[in-house]
Amino acid sequence: MSAFVGKYAEELIKNAKYIATPGKGILAADESTGTIGKRLSSINVDNIEANRQALRELLFTSPNALTYLSGVILFEETLYQKTTDGKPFVEVLQENNVVPGIKVDKGTVELAGIKGETTTQGFDSLGARCAQYYKEGARFAKWRAVLKIGPTEPSELSIQQNAQGLARYAIICQENGLVPIVEPEILTDGNHDIKKCAAATETVLAAVYRALNDHHVLLEGTLLKPNMVTPGSDSPKVAAEVIAEYTVTALRRTVPPAVPGIVFLSGGQSEEEATVNLNAMNKLEVLKPWTLSFSFGRALQQSTLKTWGGKIENVGKAQGIFDKVQS
Image (cartoon, rainbow, N blue to C red):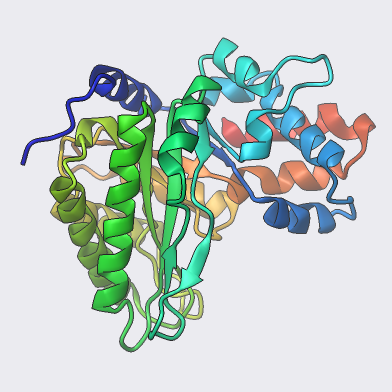
């Protein structure tokens, strides 16, 4: 299958490879206004733009944290925000060799005729938006598809709809110079065991990569952001080594070696859990043709948020916590 060879092809490959630099990862700071509002509410801080800007500035100007990052995913509002000194956040990131990225999807909606399964929206003017984001300094994008495990889920319709959606998004991004992060997230909700999660993950990823090939997506200019293979949230926990083995096996069976990097979502895990599981994967002595790293949001920010508490006098201490979590 012929892959995308437009004017951005070489740049896409270069940027994807850089973002997948071993030892570095991605900070997901692309929470929607509603989601970040819940985080701010948890520390009794009002959800207004000034407070959202203050939190993002705290993260992006932490003295050492950016050393461990190759990319940061921004929400559209944040792409245009500046520090209190008037420097655009995009410039702050670029000066620290961190690639700015942008969330481009518009959330999920229920699939008609199926209860509880969703597809992702956001295709309206996606090409024009990607072109504008590129002009503003973004060099990669993120689009999240959400699937669930149940007695008959994920259904074939859900799998195909979300795989096709991810592929369509990916090629539109590449046509406009943005490296697409492909994110098919299988939720942890439920009491299923790890084997069921592994089977669902393999089925979904196989469908996603078939769709990407059918849409002529340049795999060398993409990244994958999958869930880790774990038991359902209502099931007994298993050791990190077990999670590592099931996850890496699922990836080895489905993800082509042309993909430069896999950046895991934390999927509601704690900072410690997500990090321990990722370390266990990297320690596995099997062939892994892609870099395995992180694209954590809440897992990297939780402790920092609590320490900050919306108070300017706590910024230094909170940045110290953020630096420590990153390292």
